[in-house]
Amino acid sequence: MLLIDCPYCKEMRPEIEFAHAGEAHIERPADPASLSDAQWESFLFLRSNQAGICFERWYHVHGCGRYFNAVRNNVSEKFILTYQVDQKRPSDTEIQVALKLKAH
Ligand SMILES: [Zn+2]
Image 1 (cartoon, rainbow, N blue to C red):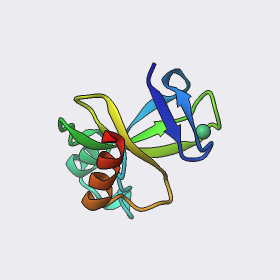
Image 2: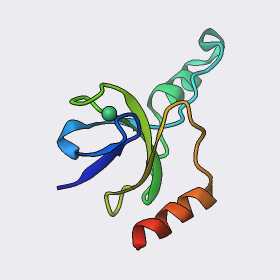
Image 3: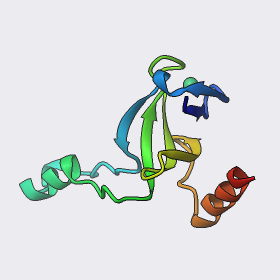
Image 4: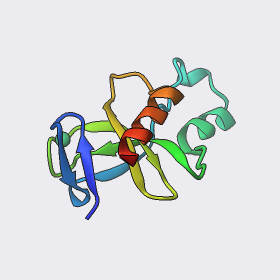
């Protein structure tokens, strides 16, 4: 069973308690009314959808009920690290350190 580390509950919980909530760090436009239809469509629907290490939003639906961010490899399905939504996006160095810690 896959265990996910909720950064609010501060414990590993089974994946069935969580729901994927899309790509993380999608910034809402400051003035949505000024956007063209194509720009608004891009904000709402277009995502990077890259294979490998990605930044995702997750929801602890059957736990604390809070959203958090995760760095995950969507090819191997492994979580690298999780962090609260008000924390900054981890740097490449922080991700590499987390990967080395998980390897041991
Ligand atoms: Zn939680």
